[in-house]
Image (cartoon, rainbow, N blue to C red):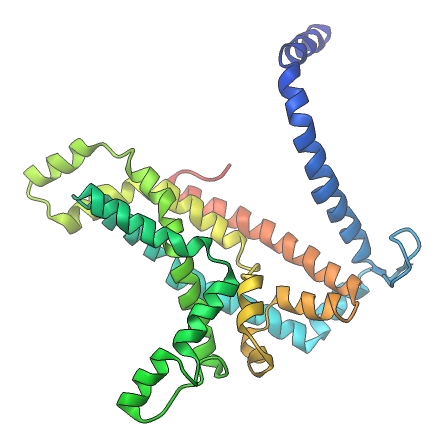
Length: 306
């Protein structure tokens, strides 16, 4: 035991400058992440009011957690969160993979770089700009898409006020914004694939689709499992900024998610304890989903996040 302590002390002294560099980072996470998490967890078991502190607020136990499932609007927001996140995962998970494979197979380096630049740009747009772009195309009054629809059908579609079409806008805008940036990780994985495998497959008579199915996709399967695990873990965390920008009172029943409910009810109406309870519950379920996704990734690809 003494020798172990001595070796630990020697290693700590040897890497003392690294520890000094790490200290501000650790302090940042403690102050801005872990302390607020602990305070929020305590608040979720209290009836917190303005003027109180976590040390003086009334203790209500699991009362706030019971209210979550008694609040019909909140239950609807949980349902909407699962549905919207599920649809985004369904329609948005594979396009970056397909795009990465297409970019990887491009023979022209110039066209490849130009295509990548164009496809990456939407990622850097804020949701305010994205909303403006989609409003210009899909608005009922002067939207380009509605003018085309009117030309062929004689009528117009209220994309922003009709529940089904509104979800289409959410999913389509999300895929458009993230597809280019999401392909970067897969492109990086493809650069590590041995090109001799493709040459051997060509000699054996494999066409492009067979090469993708038997070489390309198996090579990036661990990365696919990694990204899938992270996506599963965020299934209860729909894009708050996107939905807050796009939605309105007419589509609350299909667009109100956990994050927007917490913002509207928890902050605007000062239901801090209830908002803290749903946030803690959300985080706990997300951790369980990440663990389940990691197990699924290990079973499918043999690798996981840990």
